[in-house]
Length: 271
Image 1 (tube, rainbow, N blue to C red):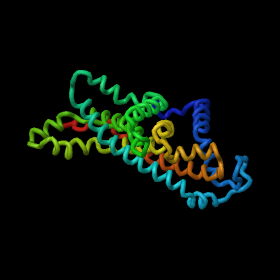
Image 2 (image 1 turned 135 degrees about the vertical axis):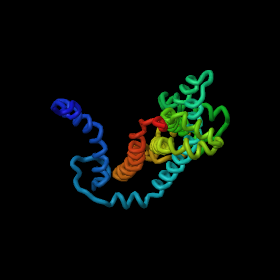
Image 3 (image 1 turned 120 degrees about the vertical axis):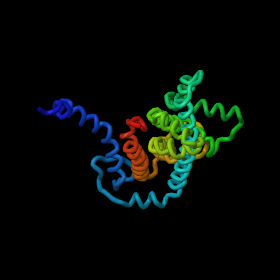
Image 4 (image 1 turned 45 degrees about the vertical axis):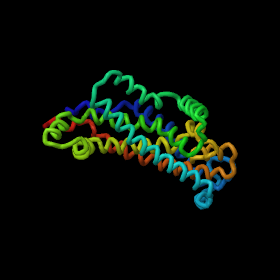
């Protein structure tokens, strides 16, 4: 007899799943299609013709490169900050017991639970009250608030799957705290940190709302795209950039999925 898990799904469920996937991904396919259109100012369907010239036009646009470089720098530094602070918070919450531990955990994840506009307004108000001019670093600080949460969630889940007996055995064998972290903890949580860093980079790279409130006159790539849609000059250029953003953010998310899909085993549980 065939196992229940191999039973075919009903036709209605298959159609509903297919419809949901189309609803989610058809707009992305349209972005890819209009990156090749010969029409410059409107969205005709089907496109009157297909061309590769917009890729060359995009390559020559200095404003695109400036916005792209700013987004990459912001996402990279925000991710590094998140990896350090998120890992430390996760270690403290998962490996020790103290009064108010759950409250601190809630406060750490709160920035990603709040609407982005609330976080943006709060950060803008704080920077204004402290007379901090809006700059590259205010964008980084704004992005780090939610990047820390992503790393924290991945790290704390993996910390809880690492058996305490491994660390106790390391200490019993004479290893100090740094050696235990390097040889025992880091190999067990490394993939979770890498996945969290990838997700944090992807979130920071395409963030709009918080950047709007903390960026001042600077334009990251998503802000540049929003401005181009409001004041269109060459619409297909925006679609070419959008296609690049989709690819850049999709690859880290895919990598994070493959790194964490087998992380349900407790390291050292069989020792």
